[in-house]
Image (tube, rainbow, N blue to C red; front, side, top):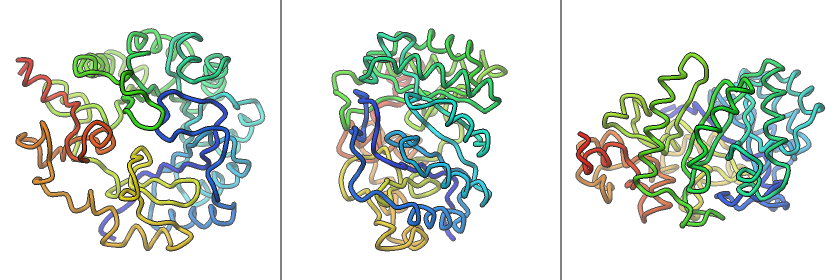
Length: 344
């Protein structure tokens, strides 16, 4: 195989029990139409193993709202696939904790977007989410899981990053992924970070990664970097968007995408496992061609004449597409900011 799947993010169900203002999928209380049956989902698990997939993140919507999630997770684990979860924590309880103790996931992640009830519950669209999320983090940490938090940053919570870190340290969280909210789905464009705010966030991450490296693994998502002085710490070794190259996304109805975060039309849908096998889709030379057939001439905006263009490939495709008309020209770039502001 020319390409090998290192990471798969699987939307087990689009159904969700909260209503986040930044949700790119616009998930709500209803499941996606014609979501995969248990039998179909187990077939996908087998195919992921055949393709040599190493890691699967079970997501949503809210993954714990799908009743057969334990069966799917157990089968993945039996086949040697590293399984982890990302949840909003609202449905988490002791019964779920007991099942996780059996499955032994490599990671249990929960989304924390504020340092207090007022911020987090506002962003998440439901009262009580903050307390339940912190409780889930605490219980999973005490149970010995590699517990992580995910924070999606925009204007509403950028000022609270320092205090969010304090909460994570207090609850024994082992890793913290920080990502930038993009204006798609329900996310209002006016809440999106500007360039100065983006750089301040990147600087915060770089500083804390170093300061807390022996305590908590602070990691930036693919939408934060690249190169420049901060690039020595952020996304080192970045070689462009991994969608369809090393990563794959599966929607709950069996639709295959390079990245589940890109919500911009059929162009980014590579087929459905009910029509073609996942193996055929992944190995098809015409799949993911927007990324696999990258040409430096595709670069747009600030990336067009950049000396790192052929390596960086325009940064995060989801971020680029959300803010511009191209997959290859993210407006948020550490190197460009430092160059235009006289830092380098």
